[in-house]
Image 1: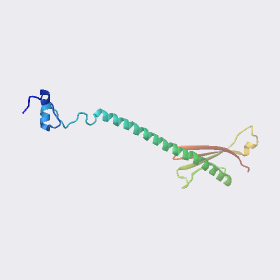
Image 2: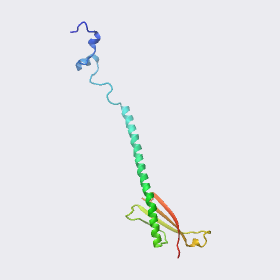
Image 3: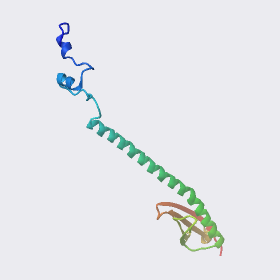
Image 4: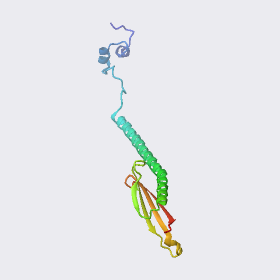
Length: 156
């Protein structure tokens, strides 16, 4: 029974002590549903696009780091291998062009030596005994190339 001292607004205003069905009947809303629950599709799509951009950037940075690391390793190793091969040529006194690899010690590394005569009018008779040696060290089917040119004096 409604007493005279309650106003009309108080009689129809839902209270927290009302039951679920009575509150729904009075207000027309489901009291168990909150207004802003979850994310909208637009918010999810924006979040996914930001994550995708960040992941692609990180992947590219990682790939570039790996490439720079392998290039750095090659340009540190190739001069040493070229000097080694030149030392072998001096010991053997080989005067012919040749090619090969560094066997199991340095897999993937290959070398090629080209020996040619030097033609120069300024050097005169010295040019007859002087040889130009071009040495090329490559890695992984010429992915990386290191060239070395030197001149040696070979006497008969």
